[in-house]
Length: 218
Image (cartoon, rainbow, N blue to C red):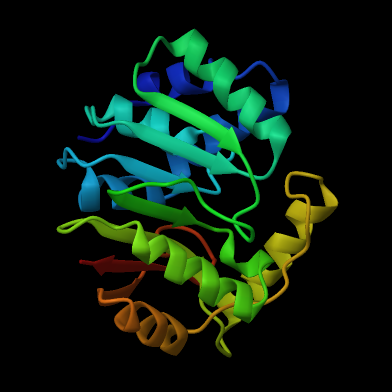
């Protein structure tokens, strides 16, 4: 299912902050990652752990698409977690839970699908490997680890993506500037060692960014 513009407006209307409202409306309408996640896990009844969930947009998008399994959001930005919890109350959705914490020091106990969108660049390579290993350990049999990230290479798209991440830092949407970008070999090595089958494909959509979708299945 692809949500209508009216349904996306309904998600945006859950936001209390004016900036969050306009960001949500634009993000959901233009970013191909949400439909990509729906294609990968939208018909499954396994629970979902969204690491780096922000204000919980993926959870509401999945609910709008008819996904009914429990969803746990986890993010280190307490302000965003507070907004996510407020949005859940306004939405009336059941089975959505959010908590604040640092993925570098531990993840919630979990068994199901795991999603990591657009946060790996804020970790060092060693921290990335540790997070990928911990996330893979939480993927249930038949489950998937779904990641969207910029891959490091020599393309113009890569340079544009780096610039965009610094703009997000300077506008205070993200707390930190990027630290390191992973490459494809890193995912293949770490996730294969964790017992997952790895598939990597471009996920540019209509954006200028060097985003790729990594799907690793147990």
